[in-house]
Image 1: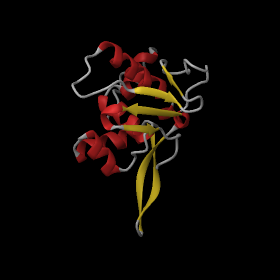
Image 2: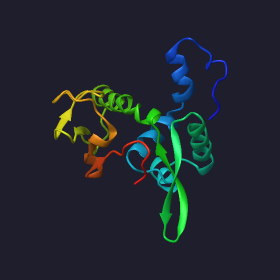
Image 3: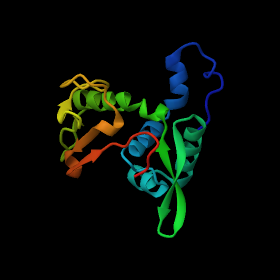
Amino acid sequence: MALRSDWSQEFCPVKRSLDVLGDPWVLLIVRDVLHGRGRFDQLRENLGISEAVLSRRLTGMIEAGLLTKVDYADGARIRQGYAATEAAADLLPILQQLSLWAEKHTALPAGGGHMALIHDACGQETTQGEVCSACGQVLLPEDMSWDKPWKHARERLQPAGTLS
């Protein structure tokens, strides 16, 4: 993921953020890592992305400070996976707001269902991305679950720096 060198020196913060986040794969990778899918094979399989493209994006995201490598045991072997940094965890409100926007402004595919953002700290669904609409607390990854009816699953998010 090569940053646009001419954008990194811009005064406009939107342009600077798009320099890092403008590739759609970046937000999808952050989403998956926050859901505890930080192993290379998990990311490749869940995203349907080629190994070459995924490798380039992961390298760029480490360089940009969004991800860090973490060790995990795979049987007798020690392997490396990817965990969100604080910078990536700070994208949670954006990811959640994108989800809420899509629920409101895009057609739901057949067989889908409403994805609920659950604030586990109070147990209620929130209709906001940054602060719980039910209790008013700031939403942190470790306090959130996404209820995905098309998967028949509620997926709990992971705090920054962890690989499940």
